[in-house]
Image (cartoon, rainbow, N blue to C red; front, side, top):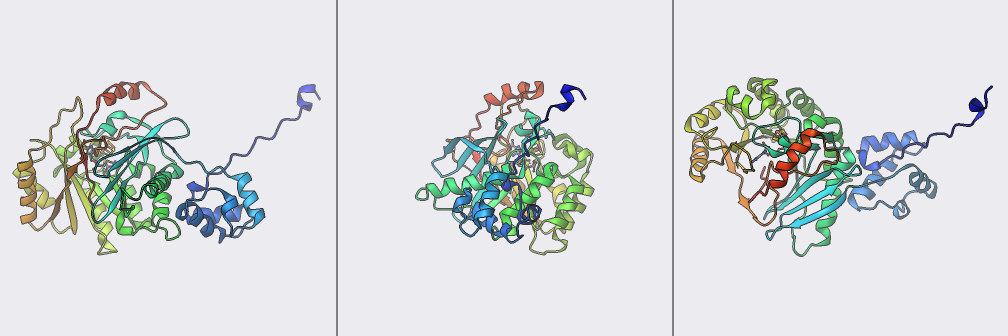
Length: 387
Ligand code: SAH
Ligand code: SF4
């Protein structure tokens, strides 16, 4: 035997687990795997998410040995707050830094009757919709469940710190920040489960909404596996135009998309689908488009949300005139559709829909190229998110 072979090779240190990656079921499995009782899952979920406690020594209903074990085995990291901007009207935007240096954005929009948190699911987005600056960044990576639910954890605590100025807490979460949530399905699903779990944030299933550009197979899976609500980024009433605006339409055209939407209200009549329609001047906002849209949405118990386009440098699009948007709304309403226009308010911080940029740590040539453009982006208005 050579000297080399006789040397003892050190055991690799086992990687620590982040408990924020687990929903109730995941925690139960974890506790069983470390020889603890599954009911610990409920206790720990409640400590972490309801009470905001990450220090095991404060988890007084856990046995001492369990607390020691968890201290050794876990590292429950949260994203770090890089900057927080607060608008005069109470809208807040956080730029959060992740462990690898990437940045994501989370936005809170308080209204009279609700408080909506807009959560990111990826760093960047691969789908390249032609009117979206997150798409223009390109894709960097998926977020972990801990990074997704971590945005909620942080927002709840930040809002509680300053309760006087912000009388609303989070009542709604929309997966409408950076990224396409259905391309990160396995990490998004447990995060939404935690949002809706009574031992965690206890949000109503009608108030946790996933927004997608239309990944049909994953929509069908979601209809089966989650009770969340759905928003679909439609933006065009025919395939030719939608292929141009939302390129994923070439893979999953409107007929398939509408079929997948039907699955959502099949089982639960209260479960509605919201169609988002960004108003682009002379592109998708004519009377003929309204007529096509009415036909497309006939017999769907849905809501339509018209979003005034938020422009950014180098975009070829402009926002439709206010009058055009009102006419469009009117035409749809006359046909019996429930239509809202997303209000614009707060001009003092940059948090507009479709303009969340965050930051890439790993600057590939694609992200570098787009970063130059993103640094120029100074959105003038903030759009309210209303589902
Ligand atoms: N990827 C998901 C969720 C994030 S985008 C999706 O596409 O649904 C959230 C919403 O903002 C989508 O409806 C998107 O179409 C819209 N959006 C993107 N860019 C926009 C812009 N510049 N102005 C207005 N809305 C925009
Ligand atoms: Fe991605 Fe949604 Fe933007 Fe399209 S609209 S590029 S799917 S984030």
